Image (tube, rainbow, N blue to C red; front, top):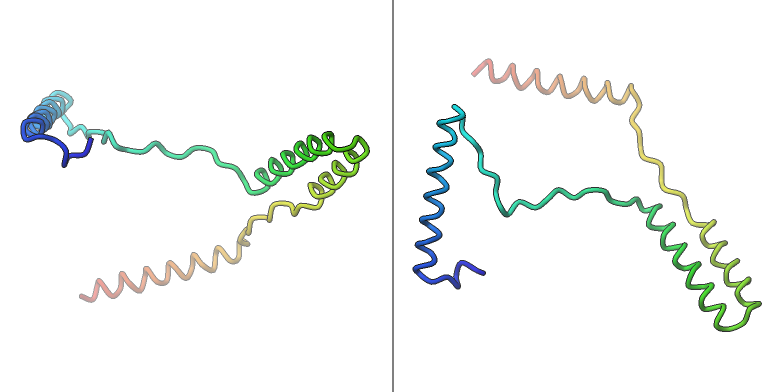
Length: 129
């Protein structure tokens, strides 16, 4: 339900509940000796997992192979072999996943040295002020 659709009484009740929650959080903080942070109710859960492009391609190719077998079985038994071979060939010829770029140790050291030089210059400029 949207906040715009609530009646004045419902809005007052919601405000009272928020005040009660705030009071309870203060009491908890007093008990534990530190502030407790309330978790927002609307927080979205973190996305887990995922699939690589190569994984998706393998699944798609397998699905195409299954459907090619089904379609070929409906037409002619001899056509099954040719359709399966064509789809299997397509699966084999798909490109492998691109290798991730890895930076050499020398390149990392060069970037690190440049960053340190920038920070040193910035700190020196702030020290002059």
